[in-house]
Image (cartoon, rainbow over all chains, first blue to last red; front, side):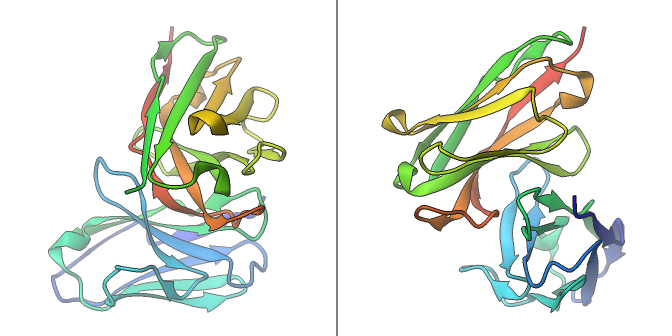
Length: 107
Length: 123
């Protein structure tokens, strides 16, 4: 199976800060990479698909980039409502796998 | 509005069996592949299984292969997960999730999720 290594596992930032999360695949997955947001007690929500495409209705402060094995997820200006855990997920093959998650908190 | 409502989660003893259900509404159910994804308490997400639109193709994570069976009844807009030989490590919140791709194929990611049903495996 493809292993997805996500870092950091947690971070604390101030409102308005730029936040960056990375995800590394154990092998080349082209751009078959998505990002989800999960707020406490809620189901995950798709934010970014195909590494860099913003899902309809998702604020433009969220963005993604990368291809191959290295990917980045960015919140350009952290808002209080962005407190959540973020997961990357690969779909290069049907042994679908997620990263371990990054918990984002407000400083 | 797309809705996915899971049910069937209970406390079960190790080695026991359980069947989860997911009732779907708000979209043409038999146009889409469906998935089960689970989350152990305080842990991350783990994909469990995928079924094609017609039930003709199924895929499983290695951790559940041979013990879990995914199925669907398109006449009832329902998805199922039969879980046998349950282990403590199967304890989790089980989500059903809709694949993004419409038609006779699947992408392997999810645009709608239910709220989950909790399975606890404990003696």
